[in-house]
Amino acid sequence: MTTEAQQQDGAGVATSGDTLTVTDNRTGRQYEIPIEDGTIRATELRKIKTSDDDFGLMTYDPAYMATASCRSAITFIDGENGILEYRGYPIEQLAEKSSYLEVAYLLVHGELPTQRQLDEWTHQITIHTFVHENVKEFMQGFRYDAHPMGMLLASVGALSTFYPEASAIKDHDGRYLQVIRLIAKMPTLAAFSFRHNQGKPYVYPDNDLSYPGNFLSMIYKMTELKYEPDPRLEHALDTLFILHADHEQNCSTSAVRSVGSSQVDPYSAVAAGVAALYGPLHGGANEQVLRMLRRIESKDNISSFVEGVKQGDERLMGFGHRVYKNYDPRAKIIKKHAYEVFEVTGTNPLLDIAIELEKIALEDEYFIERKLYPNVDFYSGIIYEALGMPMEMFPVLFAIGRTSGWIAQWLEMIDDPEQKIARPRQIYTGRRGLEYLPLASRP
Ligand code: SDX
Image (cartoon, rainbow, N blue to C red; front, side, top):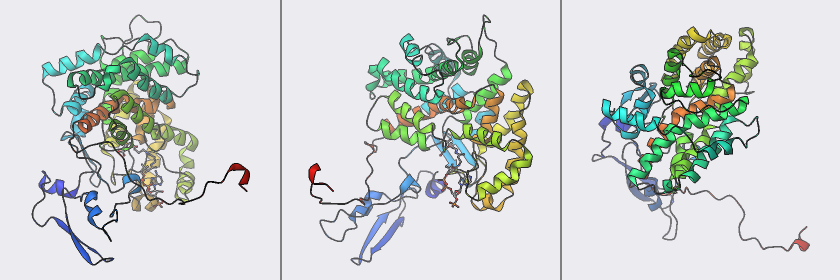
């Protein structure tokens, strides 16, 4: 979330008087700490010591609730007002007027492309959709019922062994090719994981189709000579990819930045992002929402379910957010697109339960006082299910969209002169100075 200072003066330039005066009551000493962009540098606290050999103060911030880890110009979120912008463009405009590949270009390059730039970007991604046959054989080694997110996690990491030149992360031309490959191959790996789960032959990319259309073809094509995607489903999926493309320093993006800070190749860094997104509190939430709606089963059971949540028995999955303390703007857009999909696929009875559940929750004091609103995952799973996707594929679809955001954030981190290998400190709570006891003399 962008700090107040940045919102006020934009450039975030510290003006005179932007300081914190701290008195250390242990020594009576005073310290002037500069305030920049609504933050203070934690390293400034190291000056606050009780003696010359004192390490100095640090901040203690489990889960980084109040810690900015970087400067970024990629995504702006105002959680209190439910605002989300990619490179300054409101998500509502991009969802309505842009395409996923154009948004991916915007996130990676920082500007919307010209027609020629978009054509070249689309061409490069299209011709890189295939993976080496060994990758396909590697994926066929998984159990028949392996979770597709586990398969995606492993196969993205495996790509680093097929492109060893990717470790040259400072080589701008070389790493640009890896950026293209990751965006191009993520749908292929995702679709191969799906087909593996279904016990069906893998379908190769069809480079005549659009980015979402090709993914639908690799998922659904059977004996027909050429799969013809329904344009309404193609458009709905493309919009879902746009809505999932980036979200500033979320858990999986922080994982990509942290792992990438060791200067490992981008495939390994993105594999770390896939691993973080797999978690039920993050990208796995859309799968958990469907399981939750299935368990509720009918509108009649909603009230008792909500009571259970308020008792702490479980969480209302798809609700709440670390940053949004208002309605997630992506949830609003997805909810609208649900009806577009259902025109083609027929409605989903779980949608009626979700809408009633949202209505009851939004009027309940427990959720209001905790500022818990639907997030991006609350309605996305219902659409994915209507598209015929099994629940296990929901976080995989999230990963396809988020790949362009992970890459944009990785590139920004690599080129940021302030960034170095991530290595937090700790508060040590263990024992000290013990004597080693030989096994024979241990009690
Ligand atoms: C994503 O960070 C991002 O940007 C993520 C994401 C992205 O695009 O990358 O937006 C994608 O991950 C969306 C979130 C998907 N996860 C879920 O829907 C899972 C359910 N939601 C939660 O578990 C929770 O809301 C989090 C994890 C999303 C946020 O948790 P926080 O900020 O750490 O908040 P918290 O756990 O400290 O909760 C604050 C209070 C607690 O109550 P008290 O202990 O104070 O009484 O709110 C309660 C929580 O118990 N609470 C919920 C709840 N979420 C929080 N109670 C019921 N149901 C919930 N969903």
